[in-house]
Amino acid sequence: MPLSANLGMMLRRKLDEASEMLRGNGGGDKDIELRVLRPLFQLQADLSYMPHENELLIEQIETKDGFHLFVYPFEGRLVHEAMAALLAYRISRTTPISFSFAMNDYGFELLSDQPIPLDDSNAHELFSPNDLTADIQRSVNSAEMARRKFRDISVIGGLIFQGYPGEYAKARHLQSSASLLFNVFSEYDPHNLLLRQAYNEVMDQQMEERRLRNMLQRIAQGSIVLRWPNKLTPFCFPLKVDSMREDLSSEKLEDRVRKMQAQLR
Image 1 (cartoon, rainbow, N blue to C red):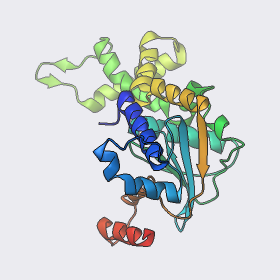
Image 2: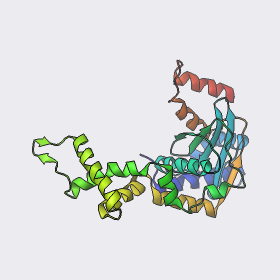
Image 3: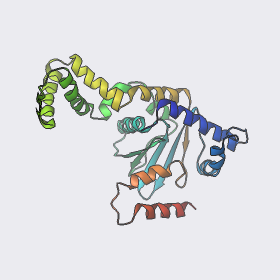
Image 4: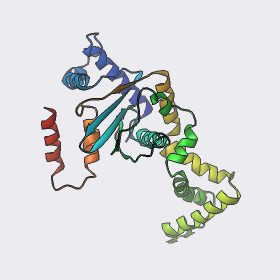
């Protein structure tokens, strides 16, 4: 299960306490978990930066794989998946560029074979909540997502006959019938309530639009911290390992992770 909004807020608060602890301001000295993790937080601070609760940390690192952009909103995997697609789309509007994505509950990664044009001059614009709904729909195939949602909506609405008891229609037949209705409504009745419901469910359930908007508003009210570390940091290490799972290699994942750990030491 991805992080909930409340759990993400508490995680950012605990990281803020860890940041204050490293600065000698008390902070998380009373929490045994933060004390145990202090060496990891110290390494993150030495290599890059430990963000406060009202700060968004962005790391840009160049490796043999290409140019990495790591962002840490701490909002949960679903929100980060939508944010990665949104950020890639907004960057691609100004520069022809291709990305691959990786994300976890703490942040997400954009990887490209060319430098990623994100710096102090355009960071706040790229994370702006303005035109969010339109940009999300352009950045992902929302029509195809809505088409899949429309099958269940049309069944509940009585538009599609599921079959008789014991002889139910197959899922692909239901999807074919729903797709036909979806195309007709999209072309001749774009304001149909069932059609709008399909898009609303995509935005609310799959894209987490409300949480994404709240996150962007929180970033707009805070500050963005950009860092260019020379090597992988404790924050980005899990994201890098997660992206390695999709690579074709004769080495075991555990052996490749050990090599990366040895390079950090």
